[in-house]
Length: 173
Image (cartoon, rainbow, N blue to C red; front, top):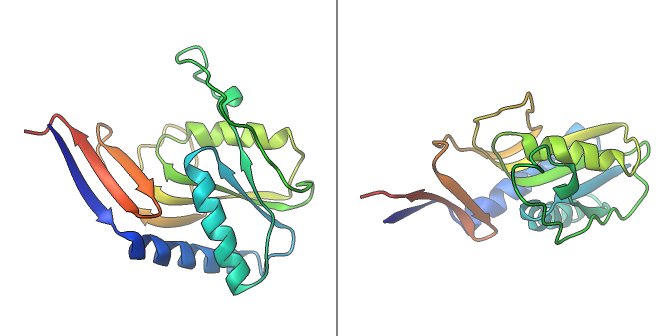
């Protein structure tokens, strides 16, 4: 049996995105040289939402995507399925890259994204924005912008969309 528990609804997600956009603008004293990159796949919709909100509040920023599949450290443990590609819309040299993902768990995907970004240049800074921080880090990675800290067990799954955040627990009687 599978148990599903919605912990954030669509309005909660929108509020978190708005707050994170304000924090990004404030931390960087505006949006000059800011580039928003969503990690394939879960971070893409969130990067677009953050970019739209930043544009509404301040001014438009370049928004792109980064595919980390070929930079993962578990390539030998699971099949590599690069079904997407990176789309970095501008030169990131000397920019501030806001790396975006929906959920931060072990930190291994973020580590791979840092390697992938280096293929495109050397930004002045890379900041991490996540909608959900689950904890359970295996690497010393900490997000700069967090929508919600959501302590979960390592067996639970977290599903994140613009329509909400749901915790999925398998095998619950």
